[in-house]
Image (cartoon, rainbow, N blue to C red; front, side, top):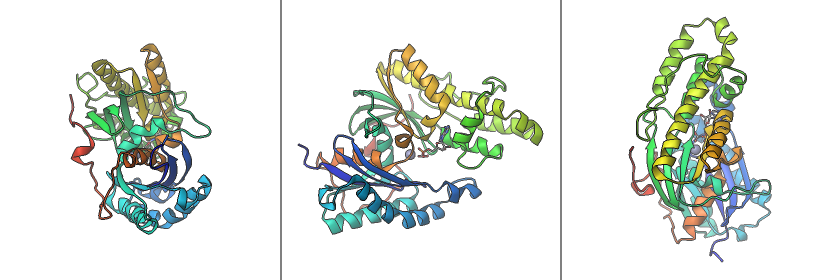
Length: 351
Ligand code: KG4
Ligand code: ZN
């Protein structure tokens, strides 16, 4: 029996406030989140000051709600874990201060967690409605969100190697900026995805940055610039008329790059288990083409349900309880960091 059976987890690295109760097997006993999209939409992006203010308003009520929903008492919680890197420093501080206060008052073990480790372990989360496919280490992971787009080789809990990342925009950021050009509300990824329905995937020729390069590096800034030039030349009426074609062409270009690099990662590593996670893995076309690709290649693919793809505290809980049960602890002087730490990944760089 592991020494800690379940933890309370807190995630406030960007604009989602989330609290979860997770056990040592990855069973999510409760996860409750508050989304701030409406607060940031008028500004076309996340405003750090607004994000941290909203975290301070919603976090404590969410802690109480998560505990109530899990039907656990404080005496049944064996530790407190929290995202302390990477992220918006003001947002991270709110989660950290809250987690440290709870740990001190309740005399519980405390640990700071890398947000990206959470995304990498999300495919192991389970709940009453979802059982993940049997995943085995080592596996290849593509984490693709508003802030990150990277490929990893995951050898074990805690053993992650970065194979390569985007050199500029994250894929979700590219979707959001493209949506802005079309006059859509932030964050626009899900709307672009929806508007692409029925559109022609090759209606407009758009570049696939670095797709042919024999490495794991990606780039979405050229695609963004080309799309900008294309959209600027169109009248409002034409934009509206060609909306489905524009969105389908843009989405296809992003998915082409992601799957080409994922395919290369699988070929080079020879691994048979693959994970796609992060907010953009909600994308219909990425999920659809990912499934077809994995079947053709006879790979075991896990794409977690949406609630565990986008930012959530359950994934932080699983990463946290695995580390706490290995004996890791953070001091109550732990601070936030906008970056990952050198020791978080085995090696960094493109190949
Ligand atoms: O993982 P996430 O919730 O937060 C970050 O860590 O960034 O990802 C949010 C990102 C946003 O850029 C959003 O536009 C994008 O994921 N996104 C999508 C879709 N749903 C969310 N992008 C493309 N297609 C979608 N269906
Ligand atoms: Zn994230």
